Length: 81
Image (cartoon, rainbow, N blue to C red):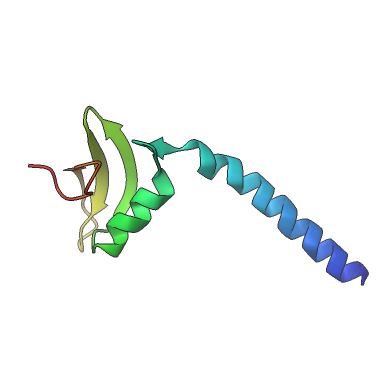
């Protein structure tokens, strides 16, 4: 029983430490985590996102490990022209 309580306490502390960091990052009223997951689901290897004027700028890593900045439309999350 004591081990179960300690495990539950450790899990609660871990989530408490991570949640504020994830909750504070927003990009055009979406969490950064959501935008990254959405872009990765679309096949982009996105590692960072930020607001850039009226666009979302994403750091994309290609198959060779090169990073590039790609602008996306904040409403559709498609590449902005």
